[in-house]
Structures are given as C-alpha cells and as structure tokens.
Image (cartoon, rainbow, N blue to C red; front, side, top):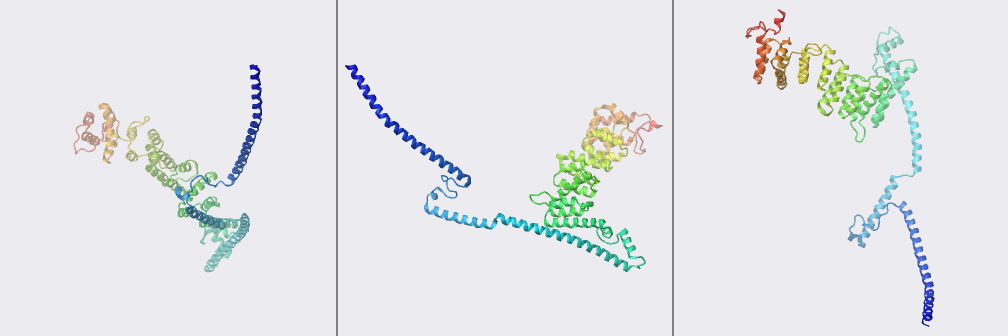
Length: 487
C-alpha cells in the first residue's frame, strides 16, 4: 500500500510540473522574440548612423566638452545661448564668404571659353605686331642708309651704297641682325625676325615674372643669341625668390647641359659666371658635373675661383683642388696645376709632372715649397729621382725657408738629415753642385743657432776635409764646393 501511494504522488507531481512547464516555455519564447526585435532595431539604427557618419565626418562627439567652454559654462543655459549665437553668426559669415569666393562650375567653363578666345586674339595681335615691327625696323635702317647716301657725294648708286653698308655694318643695331634685315632673301629676313621675337619675348617673360619659362626660352634661343652676360645680369637683378629655384642657377644648368648635348662649348665668360653661381649656392656637385662632363671654355680665373673656394671649405678641399688642377692643366698653367697636386699630397704625381713638363726653373720650385712646405716634397726635390740629379739644392732650400719665416719646416729638414750622421751629410754636400762654400757656412751657423751642434760640426768638418780647401775668410770670393772637381 505504501509503495502504491508513493507512485501516485510521483504521478501527481509530474503532471503538475508538466502543466507548469508549458506557460514557462511560452514566456521564454516571448522574451526571446522581444530581445530579437530590439537587436534588429539596434542593427538598423547602427546602419543608419554609419551612413550618416560618412557624409557628416565633421560632427562632434556630444559626450566631449564643447571647445572654448569650461565645464561650468557648458551646463549654463545663458552661456550656451550666447555661444550658440556666436556660432550662428560665424556660420552666416562663412556662408557669405563662400558665396563670394566660389563660383558655379558652369561659370568656370564659360570663363575658359572666353580665355581661349582672348588668347587667340592675342596671338593674332602678336603676329601682326611682329610683322609691323620688322617692317618698321627695315624701313628705319633703309631711311638711315638713305640719309647717309644723301650726305655723301652720291657718286655710287644707292644699291651699291647699301651693299657697302652690309659689308661694313656701318649702321647701329643688333650685331648680325642688321645685315639680315637688309637682305632681299625673305628666308634670312624671317630668321632675323625670329631672333628679334626671341629677344622681345624673353624680356616680356621677365617682366611678367615667369622666370623659369624665361630660363628655358633663353637657353634654347637660336644662335644662342640670349646666352650672354646681358641675360646673366637680368637674372642677377631678379635675385632669389622664396620657395622657388634660383633663376640664375637654372639658367646655367640649362645652357651647360645644352652645350654638352649639341657640342657647342660655352664661352669663358659665361663659364666663369656659372661656376661662381654654383659655388655661391653651395652646389659643388653641379660644378663637378659641369667641369668633368660638359663642354666649357676654361680660364685661369675659373680655376682660381674653385681653388679659393676649396681653401674656405676644408671639407671639400680635395675635390676643389682636383677640379682646379683639371682647369689649370687644360689652360697650360703648369705651375698652378703642380701646386694643386702637391696640396693634394700627390708627391709622386707631382714629381712625374715636373719630369713631364721640363720648363720649371729653380725659382719656380722654391716658390712651390714656400706655398706647399711638405717635408716629403722638399726631400724629393733635393734628392736624385729616377736616376736624375736633384732639382733643388738642399742647402739653398733650407736657407730659403729660414729667410721667408718658415723656420719650423727648415728645422724639420735639419732633423731628418741629422739622423743620417756625418756620412749622410757628406754625401749630400758632395752631390750638391748649387750651394757655395759661403752658403754652407751660413747653414752651419743656422744649425748652431738652433741647437744642431753636431750637424754644424759635421758640415764644417766636410768643408775642411775637401782637398785644396782651407779656412774661408770674409775677403775671399764665393767659391763653389765642387770647384776642385773641375780643376
């Protein structure tokens, strides 16, 4: 009985739970539907917000503070009203400004059409003006010629007189253009007209401030009529323009590159001005390219400008010396080219250069060691080189250095020879045919005065040990140390 009762209770409880589960499931389903609807609405709102955000990227985040207002002002109705009025006034001002500053696209198209018409009229007027100017200049020249013919004895016909003017260019005008204006050949006259057009058009571009166009217009002018110092002066007068390339430097870049392409060397005066301009603008790279690659006309002045620039710019000194050496060598200025080699430390190259160009005097070499007092250079010049006798006397070189206030270099040379001992001194003196006994005595005194007592004694000992040589008095004439060899 008890077991049957328990089973009955279980059946009743399961029925009750089953009856309660059905409303609970419905409740959950209803809640799920509501949540799903809310999610769909949020997705739709989010999509609409993203679409608006693409077109309104300037919208401010309302959660952020209002720019220009404190937190206290941002919650004050009066302050907000005042700020709103300020923003409305600013918006009206910007809207009015935009209506004045910007025009409809159709208005721009109309203006473009009007500009095309005006440009066509300008071109027609320019052509007519050029034609009239050509006729005027030709008539003016003929009028001057007629006046001169009337003032002369009129022994020749006017045609012969005109031919004489063409040959002698007696009339004033552009060089080379007057003759062509007088030509009957319309082709040559047309060429003269083109030249005049280039000159006038260049001046027009300068006056309009279109300097880059003027640069390339001048560089490509026929017969290089605008590649002259007059054009350089005009670009110099323009000066530098902030935010734009220097017109003068552009001009030189253009004419130097064209000279390389067409194999027409730029004259020496323009070459010099171009190098000066490049260096003044700190464009050594351009100058290197011009000197090594382009067709220029070198001059001593151009080499001097680069040499002096290298003395000031120690970082690029070696490059400047190499460039100056190229220019000096091309101009046949061997003394200056040799100096550049020595200042670069190319002593072996300098010795080969001296051997190649055998026109260096002892005075030239003395001046060289004064300008470039390298110990290695002086030693090479005062010793045999490639089986040939020394170019300079060691004794005279040292005396020269002491005489021109280059005592430190002289002492350094004395230290070097002192290291070799008496044998080295004797070998040096015997193989020196230029230095006299009196000069060797003077050198011995200098050694004594500068603390080289042993070297001084060695020199005097060699002098006294020479056959046929006695102590030298002040009354004796200057005697060469090697004189006994020739007796």
